[in-house]
Length: 149
Image (tube, rainbow, N blue to C red; front, side):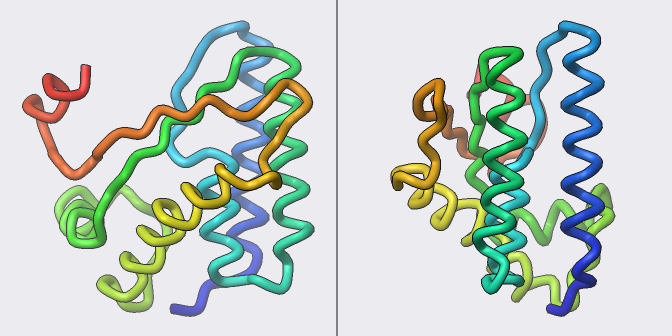
């Protein structure tokens, strides 16, 4: 689908603001997707801006690493689960042009592509590589929580 370029910029700024707010409270938090997931989704649609998008994601993560320990939780989700949840819970503000096609693109970007990139040199930080916890996120409800925890 076609997305407004400004969406990625608005999302990045919201994530950075949330990071800064967390730093002022000295609390821990869990953030789904966060900067790296947003980055791989953005370059799927804007590959010509790979360098700039990568730099801002890495800069934001480095700032967070200076203040706290960062653990990336990578939620593995398949396209059919994504489409089902979007239809059932309507929690995403991001409009898809074609639910099936765009869910497949997003799942590939935040799954395979992010997994591959995490193994590459692009994501080495001054404080070392990001520790990654990978979770299957295709189940719903209490059963999923009991299986994960």
